Each structure stands twice: as C-alpha cells, then as structure tokens.
Length: 126
Length: 126
DNA sequence: CTGGATCCTCGCGGATACTG
DNA sequence: CAGTATCCGCGAGGATCCAG
Image (tube, rainbow over all chains, first blue to last red; front, side, top):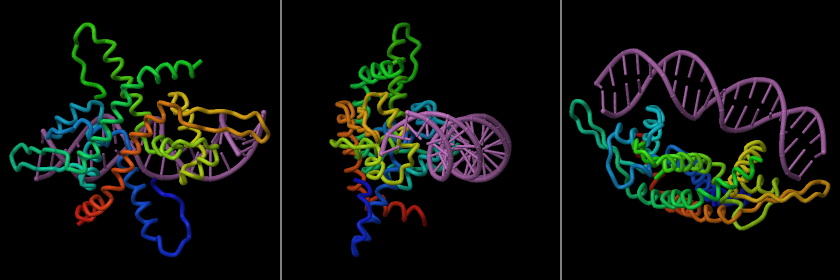
C-alpha cells in the first residue's frame, strides 16, 4: 500500500500521483488527534466545546485545526446555527463513519493487548 | 474508549490507570511512522536498510527511534546475527500482526475514498 | 460560544560524524 | 550494516487576546 516505489515506466504517472495522494491522506488521518476526534464523535453530533470536553487534554488550537482538516477532507460535517451565541455542530459524514469503523478496531486492539504491552514494557526496561 | 472521564468514585483507580495507559499506547501507535512501519513489515522479516528502502522517505533516525518504541511495546521482534557486518532482522510479533490487520483496514479505506476526498478538498479550496 | 491571530517555546526530526 | 550521539533549524502546539 501507499507508494510502491517509482518504476520509471512511461504511463503510470497517474498511479504515482494517486499513491502520493494516498500517502498524503494517510499522513493527515494517521495522527493522534484526528483519530481521537473521529472516535469520540462517533454517531453523535456534538458542539465544539462538548467535543473538547469529551476528548479531554486537547487544546483549543489543535481541535479547531484538526476539525478544519477533517472538514476539508470531507470526513466531518460542520453546521452553523446563526444564533447568538453561535452554535456549531460537528458530525461524521459517511466516509468519516467508515473510517471510524476501522478506528474502533484499533481501540479494541489497544484494550485487548493492554496486558501484553505493559508486560513487554517492564521487561524491556530492565 | 480511551479515558472516559474521572468519576471520583472510590475504587476505579485501576480503571483510570488502565485508561490512561490505553491513551499512552494509543499515542505511541497512532502516528504516521509507526503505522507505516507495521504495514510495510507485513508478514515478512526485513533488515533495517531493507525496511528503510521499502518505506521510503523515512530518515535513519526516525526508523530506529520508532523501531525501538515498537520493540519496547512488544509489537516487533528484533534478532541480531553476530556476523560482520552485522545483520539485524525485524519481524512482527503476534500482537503486531493483530494490529496490522486493523491498519490494513485503514489502507483499504484510504484507497476506497481517494476520489471522495480529493473532490472534497478542491470543493473546500474555493 | 466559536474561531482566528499572534507570540513564544520546546521538542520533533533531519544531517552528520563516529563506534562496533 | 546497524546504532548512538550531537548539533541545530523549524514547525508543532500551548497560552492569550480579540472579534463576531
């Protein structure tokens, strides 16, 4: 997956392009905060501050920044209610929900191997 | 998943501990390089430089650094052949292979929604 | 309440050189 | 070839202030 090396062949220029794009998307998505946002959002639709409280430990800046990125990639939808004070709600789009399914797998994995990993760590730190 | 907020209840201290540990592991694993390393390793057993070439675009330092981390968490095994020049081979452990399964899902997702995302991006960048 | 902008710091991460 | 150590620049990311 994700960049299989450049074979200088004449007409797979678009394949190389698609692969570098895949890498780019991968880099966007495969980071701590993006994954946590998607996971915590789940099937719900939350406001900015609600989401911030749910996740816990994420700064104002990081949340907005990652939300913009996810919105740009079409993974989260953003609806602004023109009230005062403003009310902005975020929710996963279909691609976002599909991604969340795989992140669930990651979370399950984390919990399943908690013990393994903890043991391996203390073995390593002799 | 991963830190459900501190209910000050008396005897879930170990649950909080497990949850903060889960967060820690999640932060270790949910980063670009770690995921790429595990994905590219796959079922094979590769030498340091082979792995480096396969991944492409990762620096010497980042590779060693992440390999140490993954080894510490027991996700990759490291066997040193006492020859000269030295030959060090890396391979996924059972927990590592289990993790890889979920990363495969992430890669599949990336390719499936390549078009969606690219379109959403150009829509966003008006 | 949401979000942008600004400042500032610290640590990621690249380049290089040196051991075994 | 594999790994560690050192130097260092630059950008991630926190804190704060201001606007709508």
